[in-house]
Length: 489
Image (cartoon, rainbow, N blue to C red):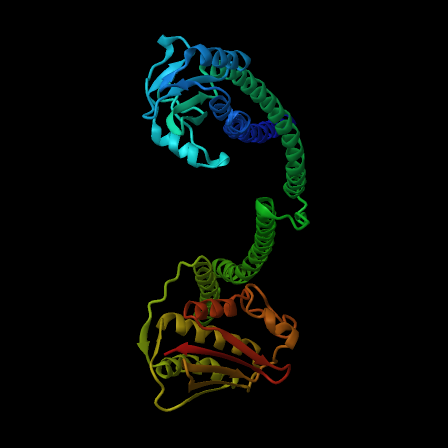
């Protein structure tokens, strides 16, 4: 594992170093290109400043044209001496139309016999810093820096001295020197870029990986079971986003672990409750069945009937417990889809109370329905709504003493029909009211007989959530309990 992390770290380092090296090499090449352009410009400007008056001096201090013709006896010596002293200079004599009339270079090397007079006139009219490039007789198509001056004879223009200030030989020497310069400059920039990239890459690598190592350590702690581990500090950029995402993910994981732990605890409670609740009716049924088998010849018809009645009641209780558990399991797994339809809830409540009248009469409990006139139809699942009423009434019967009362009140609300189920039972303490809708939660086991698994109210809450409604409870110890909810219209 450590070797793998080391390899990954090296790869990151080399990637960073390669990026910086590439950037610096590209910048070096751009620098070389710009430097060469500026050096050429500088060289041209320097030659123009140094030798720009050469042609004027030759035209002034010599008389290269006499009687309209080049005076070769005089001018060749002077021009030759000038070219020996400065090999970069080539001097030509022009007539007034720009034709070359004389020069001191091998004749075969001169490729053109006339220069562009428009450029010559533009040069003469321009200032030093704005003078153009002109024709190079030995290299047509290659503009050259030049100097030119008019020649006057007897007050009349008889021609021009045209001096090319950068000869072919000078170009060859400069090209060789430039190639050597560019090679040295490029090598220096390349190795400098490599060293800088190495230093910057190392520094960047350690700066970046410091945060990465810190993050990896926190992740490792979290992996090993320290669920409180979080990435501290206000890191910005992508690493900050990574730290924030990890912290949020860790919170979600811890929350899910808590939920799973709670679910596992509830599952253990369910197993315990189911085992106890199912064992009681099963034990009763088993006991009476064994008694019937042992005393089948001794029991009278009345005794046999009583035994069978007890077994039937236990079977009904067992069936109700199993059905309630199955119903909640489907609600918990989101397998129940309400089949909503419009109906009158007061008629449904009246029918349900009729079914509970016999049970209420046996204990002297008064059942009543108080429904407002002209209630709107509600839009809900009839069977699920009936289960809500049944579970609330079963809960009321469980905690309401004999000769008490249970009342259902129906009234119109803005969103539908408001339902209130009120009993005169033992009530619920304020600190316990937040827990009564939790699954498998039973309160007051000491004062009320245990008749279920504690999921009746949890089923009520789940069903009302399927109808986008909530249930509230208002209760005081010793004064009864009231449940309130709204069925949408």
